[in-house]
Length: 586
Image (cartoon, rainbow, N blue to C red; front, side, top):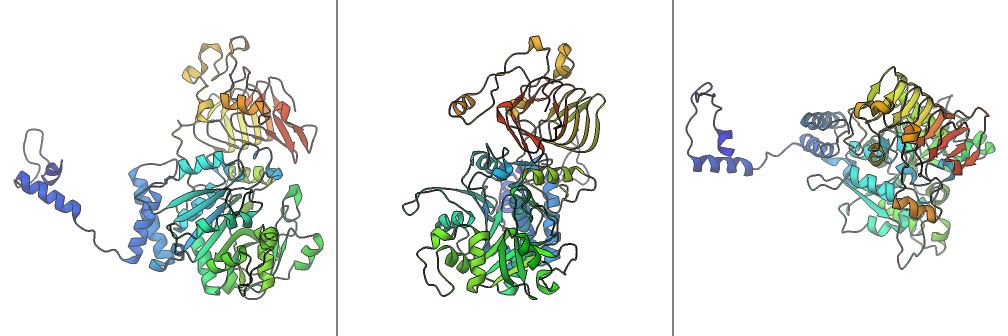
């Protein structure tokens, strides 16, 4: 092959194509090929070197809908354009920073039942993704190589997703490591807050054995928000201000649901001076504190990139923090700004927003805010989660999943294309891979990978998360379901066979971890002539024929786990693996 590569191609009859090829002895041809393979690459200028690094980042983690070599070329071009645009060169601040993503430490009632069997960052998002993909993709697109995800509660699904979507590869400098909660001689319990989680892993994060041993800053991120941000710009502002801590903040209106604590949410508010320095920090403020802080922020455009907005007069904490290494170690180890140790520190400073940041402001640390004016949504409640996903299906959408300059990365599932059969009407619908839709009307909804909707269904304002490949394989797609029904996977009732539970389900049912049995004849997906409105359907749900999930009675809260569903904030949520029998009306 090496020799043939050095010779000119020849025609079928043995004639040379073009000029006659020069005969090269076999030994000399092999030596020439080896010399070309081992020849050192020319030294690249800083911008080209960074572009090459960006291409290596993009190649192993391509967008799930692509995989061709052309995508690598486009990634190289995007990286080169980004390098020319921001001109960071070899002094890229991301190279001196390690990202720490909080993967969920305790059960969260505001997202129940979605967080019943998984950590909140592992909850599906936008048909193809999971919430954890948002901060990891932002890190990759920013050129931030060292990423650590701290996990504790219901972490199996999250750990598996990270391992499959972001495997460690020798040819890439990118590393996404999971730091699971663990017992140590100095700490025998679970972590009880965001700051406590980072504190328990501080030794690993600052260990000389890890590749980011020379990290000068730590970027602490939450795993429950949807936004697109260049963390390099945030780090540059952190350096320019000489801050110990920089908080990424966002302007919000005084009637923001999360600010008012609706559905159990809560945002922290900041009071800033003219240079963007934080004067006070209030976590989950009262109405009186909101009125006091309204209009009190006079931020200069030079530092915080924000001018006062009458419609959004308040500055809220986004849960994104940049800590200098010295400040992080001092605050988490219980030392004041002068280095004195507080023996009671570890029992009182558990959460960044509630404890650490207000204390840092009070003690005189240089805490600055960098105000972000892009799209940002906190999806920490069921209402916010559904509304945010439905926004992605609108046209135009406030947040684009089709941005090729800053794509979202996730697992490549290798599923077949989505198929529509019969008279299907879709209006503002986001559809994942491997779906099968038959003679149905779907409006303003999101359909996750492997979703199956049978004939005569009406789906409105709903997020259907789809089915896993194991469940997906149960459906008979051959011939559209065969002569039995003409609908995929749905045979006449008398011909249906029970779906046997797995051993995992039997074991967990014995200890009360699963509330829904799967010994039924209802196939995965939504059955014929069903109506679903304003609902969230978790993965692998089995919904029968002629089912109506519309909450016509206007119930606000209702725990009906034995029936396979929960009503929260007026939203019907069908549990994962749940079975809704034929003819059910809710």
